[in-house]
Image 1: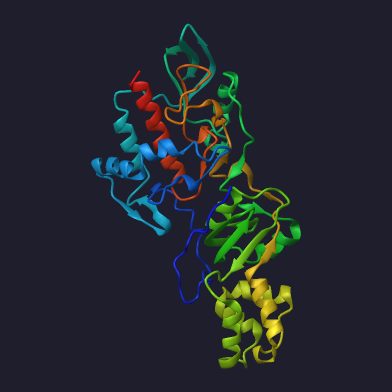
Image 2: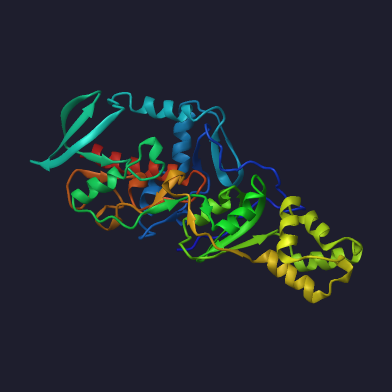
Amino acid sequence: MRGPCRARHAGHRPCQGAGRKDPHLRRGRCNFTNLHTAPENFLSENPHFCKSALSRYTQWDFLDLVARHGVAWHEKTLGQLFCDQSAKDIIALLRAEMAAADLWLQTSVEEIAHRDGRFHARLTREGQTRMVTAENLVLATGGKSIPKMGATGLAYRIADQFGHRITDTRPALVPLTFDEAQKAFFAELAGTAVDTRIACNGAAFDEAMLFTHRGLSGPAILQISSYWREGTPLSVRLCPDLDLYAHLRARRQDAGAKAVATVLADLLPKALARHLSELWGLTGKLADQPDARLQDLAARLSDWVVTPTSSEGYRTAEVTLGGVATDKISSKTMGSQIVPGLYVIGEALDVTGWLGGYNFQWAWSSGVAAGRAIAAG
């Protein structure tokens, strides 16, 4: 699976970013879709599975719905669309669309069975048990991410009960952690952000990276976490839009009296430049550095290799990678090919989007596919 580089806005100092807050933490405003949604923005055992649903209910279709409900929105970088006011606007939209249905919150699913062409569910709500029957059952939630919000992996257990295979699951769009020595190095830079190109296992992303007390976060790290596996190194390219060797040679001509570490601080956040200078033993004036030394420094900045030991896990993962295998699910209707009337949509399926509103769009597209199939009978 390959994730092509995402172009980031160019600037004279592409690596500067000290002191920025983690750019993915835009809580409360809801990144509800992405203008650039396409099948290549998703990971799956079957990368073709998502194509049908995405093509039949697109980001533009959801934007039409947003407009009908009068929700104001704006675009941030890389096609990410956010509510102007609050995520509650999207919640209100969804509640209005399901006005004819009953919404039960704080309800536990105790047991589900399928017999005589119907699903029979035993539910517990407000301390009372109730049996509910229905012709159709849609698994729309039940991934493992963020257990403090109630995530339990329920969808996988129900799908498995009805004979569906579950692919390997793991935390995705998640910060990465390191061994104690590397963690101590990063902790001293906590809160510092820098623009990077991060590559791993054939995927690469041009976005911001954030140093934390536990390791690395920020959009670039969250994106690459979906491709990373334990023991695999990351290649971090600092100043991704700059020919570093040519730049250092030019600076040697007009700023040769400056220390190498000082020139590095013109390119990177000062705290990061200082730490890298110490790590790599950068001493002396720039004028004293031969071409070979400048080439070596440029190579280090272009391929800074770090190896995470783990991730922060489901506790902070924005999504779960993997899920209900698509081999027995219709890509047109999201319906089970094993149990009539069973549908699986959204994150419950083995379809995982990039960071930036893609997973929401998959929820809208797959949900509409199932809804239309059910309505058509």
